[in-house]
Structures are given as C-alpha cells and as structure tokens.
Amino acid sequence: MAPHPSRRGLLIILSSPSGAGKSTLARRLMAWDPSLKFSVSATTRAPRPGESEGVEYYFKSKDEFAALVASGGMLEHAEVFGNFYGTPKGPVEAASAEGRDTLFDIDWQGGQQVRNSSLGRDVVSIFILPPSIADLEARLRTRAQDSDAVIAGRMAKSRDEISHWAEYDYVVVNHDLDQAEEELRTILRAERMRRDRQPGLSDFVRALNAEFETRSTGAVS
Image (cartoon, rainbow, N blue to C red; front, side, top):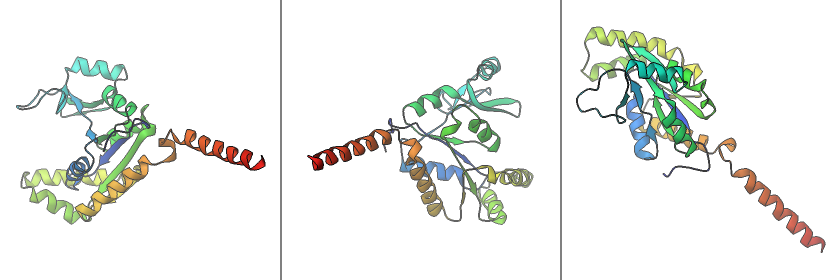
C-alpha cells in the first residue's frame, strides 16, 4: 500500500506483556502493508556488532540526548539500566506530514507520553493480551532463552503492564495469530477511514451540493 498524502499519518502504538506475540504481529502487519515503518529509537548505549546508525537506533551521547529532550525533540523517553532510550520527534513528524503511518513498539509509559505530545491526535493505541497467564508463561519458556529467575521477573512485570489495558483505544486478545492479525488490519482500515482523517471529504461534499444546485436550476428553467 502506498502512503496517503491526503491525510496525516497515524502513530500506531502496540504494547503488550513480553510473550504475548506483539513482535510477530508487528512483522505481519508490515508484511501486509510495506508502507508501515517502525519508529527508530534513539539511545545512549554503544552500538552492538552489526548495528547501524538510523537502522536499529540513532546513537547519541548523553549530552546529545539530554539536549533533544530539553528542546522538545523527543516524543517519549525513559532510562533503562543506566542508558536512555527515546523516540526522536522529527522523523515521525515528517512521516505523519507525508501520510505515512509509523508503528511504535513501546510500553504504556512511552505510549502515554506520545499521546500527550503535539502528535497525540493521530495516535491509535492497541494493547495485545495473551489468552491466559498460563499461556503467557508457556510462550516465555518455549523461547528457551531465559533462566527461571528471568522468567519470574518478566511475569511480575507483565502483571503491571496488563493493569494498564484500559488506557488503550483497542485491545486484541491473541488467541490465534491469524485472527489477531486480521483484527489489527480491521482497526487500521477503520482508523484510516475516519471522517476527520479524510481532508478531501469537505471538497467532495461541496461538489455534490453544487451538483444539486445545478440540477435544481436546470429543473426550474
């Protein structure tokens, strides 16, 4: 699908507890609509092998990051394990002006900051829930990447994250990946078609009314 220059681009926030399928669903959405792009975050941590500037992250010094925050150049930011992460406003603002939708993989705190930003009117927030807590834990264990202690920590964090579900515009329960993907597609289609996201409608309706007038004048004569 091509960008939509006739409307502002959406800021699509996807949040979920770890293991609920958010990353998989995000990849599926971008495969369905290649014009959808992930927001690239900025970080003060050092690049890891294979990471490139502007691809995985925008790499900043702590002074550069602080200057961006102070100037209002960050949509959201947070400190994680001694490093700062955040979403630069400029690229998202440019994408929105060009009618390109941006996908955000951020938690409820980041989502709250984006909703309260100057671009908040174009935010569509979606929370992904697991079908059960047992299923969530099973998915984390299936990854075979974390120790029992790490999984226990993720589960504790998940409880806090899930407590914020009601702050989102939409909630999708990921019983089945195909069904959840179709529900996400439905949300995006509907949001893109909202009346206030179609700036050309006013001119179109004026043209319809002008046609009424023309027909009325013709009937009288």
